[in-house]
Image: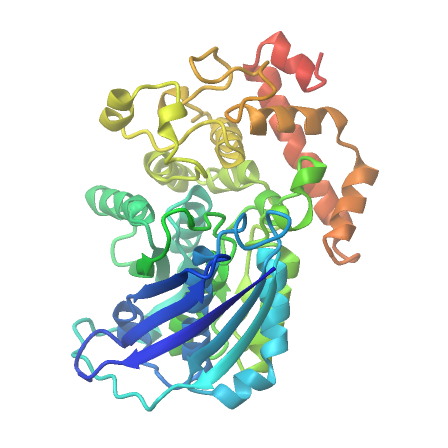
Length: 472
């Protein structure tokens, strides 16, 4: 089964408009019903910094936003034979340097296919001549910026922000680049920035640039749902960071702050192996993306300084410095790491408590569990900040109900901890393409990360959960 998506681009008639133009995705569902999606591409905040509409960086940004929304309109259950793997033909992506990108499209196909677990075939077309000259409202001095870091509003990106902003040379700043789509991510980011201003954290040491990129509207049959795995979002995020970094230097690296445990994301069971396990910052994925970028003349490195650290390690290291620890204690409760925050009808705490106390974490998904272990590492694990405490009996969460979706992640985790062994981890990482020269360090990371979780369970859980984890 395959999906064909064509891109239509309509250039803005007003060169002074902040809108670059209209991007529309055209496809059809398996019954032949049309799918037409108009994209929301908030280009102006990024352009205002970079002021580029001609380079390969600009073209990669265009590709990133189109790939992200293409991924979203093609629901895996509908457009695949096995419920996951899709054959995606994406035609007529408009770029300025069409000949260059068509020459190297296979490298992008390979990178995108590994990233999302699909088979991508992308073709490019020449973008019409652009005249984009809106009024500049914010004037930036590129010489002020020492580093560029992606900022999602999650705990890892917060630690990346704190680490970088605490270690700047005099007179320098960190540029934080953020993406949002549904609105929730933007609120996460703004909570943190508002608290920074209120507490006078890092005054004059950072600039935030964020853009809303996604779908504006989509005409489709109601039965066709959007895809919600967001596997391609990291490519868009990288493209945004690179587009801004180019203004600073052709070699300015982009910091991608994510703990190594999530980056390699070893599957907890066979059904989550390979494509079903996210690869958004997987080291193989990042290498393939950088290889594609290098082929079109982009040499800025994507760097994850935490790729051999667990989330708990990141918290511990950041908190070693007392001033950073204070900032972390204030800001970390405002960050959000949850993968299922919109499913709060199944949380233990009721809606009134959730809204009154600004609860953003379900407490049951793997990102929430990794976060709790990390918060616990510096004494900040607070069940009151969670929709459900997995160590307490609740109305919706039953650790002994193996058929329940709410307890699925936790039970898979406990089984994995009980059975984990070094040879099996080595084989899994090799199958995922990890370089043999880095294999031992990544195996060490996995064993260390899950020992931290085991120690946390030993401290917090009852005997029943400990037995499930093989502790008793």
